[in-house]
Image (tube, one colour):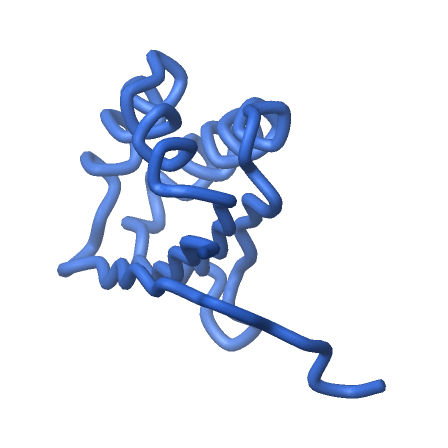
Length: 102
């Protein structure tokens, strides 16, 4: 079973540069962790202060190891101070998947 995390968060405009820097660091770090298939942030094209997170983990154990890492703790501290409103993070369990096109 694959664990998928989808998140959307609005960031305070004055914190955007700091969050983007932190997001780039945690993305690079997370992609090297065992069990990480995807770890990607993007910005909403209509509002660059809205960040979208997409994670994919091979197991619950891999996700929990990530969440307990010092790198994640450092990122979470920066990210949590930057929220403008309430972020939405949703966790999905995926049993199978196939390309949508092709």
